[in-house]
Figure 1 (spheres, rainbow, N blue to C red):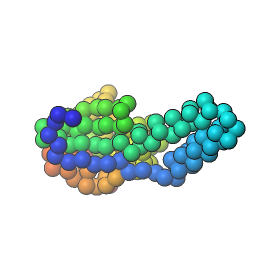
Figure 2: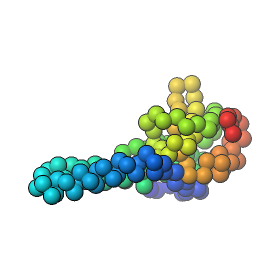
Figure 3: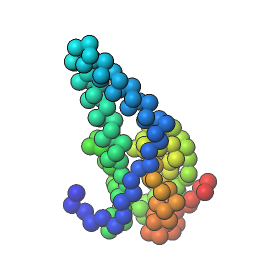
Figure 4: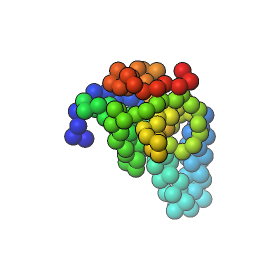
Length: 141
């Protein structure tokens, strides 16, 4: 990755959301194999692998340069200077984001830039960020 890492926070996972999706994709993969519909099986299993890598490889990295690197699988990547974060709000917002759990943090960077993430240990994440930038406003704790 090329940058010095201070902390890595893995994403929490809401299994009530992803468990049924995984089960259905694997079931349809199986049905495709049984019915000799191999293209359908490959598409279902490929979808399973794509979603799995997004979930299991979502992480939030705090670098030694005091940057927050948000990485979700091989698709989503964003860098944020922690000094530019204005506020962090505890939320259960279900909107699409690099977050695999419904226990999320809404991070406001500036007036027109924000991101929703879901570190497994939200309180520890917020404490770590606040140590770097104590001016961040924390809401709904």
